[in-house]
Length: 503
Image (cartoon, rainbow, N blue to C red; front, side, top):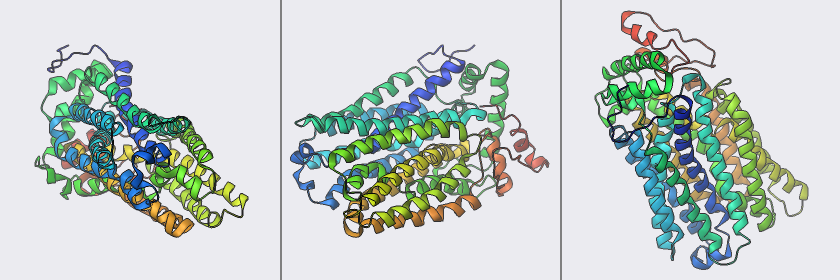
């Protein structure tokens, strides 16, 4: 077997190589999950506010300080959309991990608010790149039949990171001095080191190698992953799909906005919409400010609020591990998102109803807390994995890096909006704030049904057949076959659909 042309070597193959990709990409998302939750438990700490006194009693400035990280992540996603297809998945993730390591270390060393804000933005740049490219990188390296389950491990580790942040914050709440907030922030430095070390010994995506004309490298990786016979067959399939896409692509960044025979623009909008919808479920209102909501809306003590936030993280981890992992390929990405969005309409309606006055009603407070737990359960089942996996699947190889990155950018800019306005919204209109998310979840349901075809159990190349000749085939379930016109112009597209078990 001819060795890879890169200066490193790996002897891994089969399941160990797939597992290595999963751990490397999963730890990157564990970092993402940890960073999503860590600040929410620190902003009320007396030791944190002693260093940053201007945040005390200023919900607008507090919201900006927490949310400014999303602005960095937004620009990180935009940068990734412009350069990731040229640099490759592996180099992009390595560079981003290094940026996060430096940014997290300097956040933990901050001595004033300006320094904290600057390095939250810097850390966000790296996180934006990681969330843009790791789902695509991972999806391009695993078999279609189990792609949902394998990539959902990445999101399970995201939930592990979120849960870890809650419990680290809770444990450090008993510590005196600045260690109580500096240690949770500094702990972020551990995760990118793991990703960097693993990626030093792993090859890039075989599909990216094909896109760059490095066919021998692609063949080597595919054979390591699938064996000689299957690896050669998959390589041919990828080359055929790349050839079809090359006829309508011009190797320009603006290909993502072209309305051509492969529906590039429509598929880019699906990628953007998937992660926009995720933010409009209200998840980051709860993940960032769960302790604040338990305290201010439900009426619990600060200590109990932190404790319940930790248990809510465990609640999320339980549901994504024991339900999503088994349902995502069987039920499908779109139906999971659609059904759970419908349930979340009811959850936010109940929250708005029972949290209008918890001071005189212990029962209302209990119901409100239960709804927060139920929301995390439904979101973890239906949104945490599918909404990140879908952009990596629905976008074609020619624009996958750019289009998936734009999806990540939409996640971050609306994440910023949600995190920025939540403290002010809760302070000014109280429980009426939750009505907004009841409405947004309600609007998401028909949009998913009418515009989002199902991708489960299809190879990445077979998904192109859903958009043959610029038409959209609205596949509803994982077991629904695709009917493709077998005329000569579409013969290659039909050929690439055949084997669900391929990478």
